[in-house]
Image: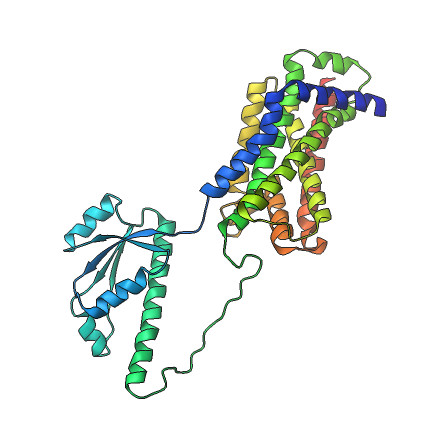
Length: 375
C-alpha cells in the first residue's frame, strides 16, 4: 500500500515541479494578496473631510473648531459662507460632513444654555457616517466637560464634581489595529482559496489528459489516490502558510502570541478539510475550467462573507449562522485569532478544531466514494 501511495505522491510532486506557474501561484499569489488586502482593508476611519460653517465667528467658536481638528480623524476641507453651499459640497463628495456653529453660540455658552450644533453628514457610506457622528459626539462631550470645569473655577468651586466614568482596558489588540484583526482572517481565506483550487485541478488534469483511466485500472486504491494527490499540496501550503505569517509579522507587526504547536495542529486540520474539499470538487467535474469555477464559487465568497473575516457572524440571521458552520475558514479564522492574538489554550480551541476535522472527514469520505464509483 505504501509503495503505491508513494508512487502517486512522487508523481504529483513531479507534476508540480514541471508547472512552475502553478507553484508560483500557490506560493506568491497569497503573499501578494495578503499585502494588498492587509493595506487596502481597514476599519480605521481617519481623515474625514469636514466643511465648516461658523455663523458666530467669535473666539469661542474658533476655539471649538481648533480643538476639533487637532487629531487625525478630521480634515478641514472647506469654509462655508452660507448654508446653501453645504448641499453642493456633500453632493459632489468634496466633504463627508458639514458642521454648522449657529449665531449666538458664545452668548448662549456665557448664559449657561444648551447649544445645538448642526452636523450634516453624508450617509451614503454608512460606516464612515456612523464613525463621524461618534467622533463629533466625543468632541462635544469633551468640550462640555471643559466648559463646566471653567465655570466651576470662575465660581470659586472645585473644578471637578463626582463623576462615574468607565476606564476601558483593551486586551489582545490595545492599538485597535485593523491589521491585527484582519490578517488572521486573510490567512484563512487565501490559504483556503489556494488549497482548494490547487487540488480541484489535480485530478481533473488527469481526466483531461486521459491518464485517469490508467490510474483506475492500476492496483492503486481510491484512498491511496486521494492521499497521493493531496499530501504534496499539504507541503506546498505549509510553506505558503509560513511565508504568509512571516509577511504578517514584517509588514503588519502581527506576531504569534500563542502556542506554535496549537497553530500547527489547527493549520493541519484546516488543510485536511480544505484539500479534501478540493479533491471532492475534482471528483465531480470533468474539466479544469469547471473545477476552477466551482472552487472559486465555494471558497472565495463563503470565506469572504461567512467566515467572520469582515462581517460579525453573531449579527447574521440564525439560519445563516447555522449555514456558516459548514464553512471551513470560519473555524480556522476563529482559531487563528485565538492563537495569534489571545494565546488561547486548547480548551478554548477544541470546538473549532473538531469542526474542521469533521468537515475534512466528510469531504474526504465523499471524495473517496465518488472516486470508487468511477472505478
